[in-house]
Length: 87
Image 1 (cartoon, rainbow, N blue to C red):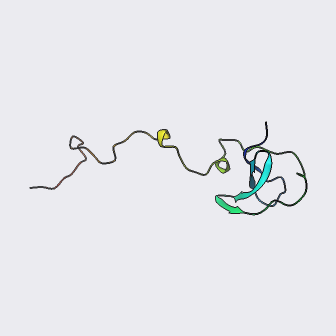
Image 2 (cartoon, helix red, strand yellow):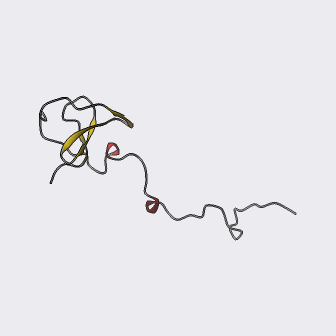
Image 3 (cartoon, rainbow, N blue to C red):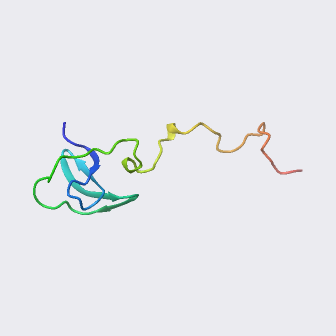
C-alpha cells in the first residue's frame, strides 16, 4: 500500500509532510501551522515515519461532530439553568 497522509518530513525541512499515493506533496506542517513548500527534487532520503494518530501533530485539531457529547444548543424550559424574560 502506498503512503497516504501525514508523515515526518523525510527531507528534514519541516516537521511533517503530506503524502498522496506514495508521493510527497507540497503541503507541510510545522507545529499547528500548515503551509506549502514543494519537496526537494530527487528520491526520498530515507524511510517514512508515520505520525501516530494519538499525537497532536497527527491531526488538525478538528473534532468530528459525533465525537462530542450530545448537548442541546439552547437550554430547554425544563432546564433549571434557563432564565427567560420575566413578564
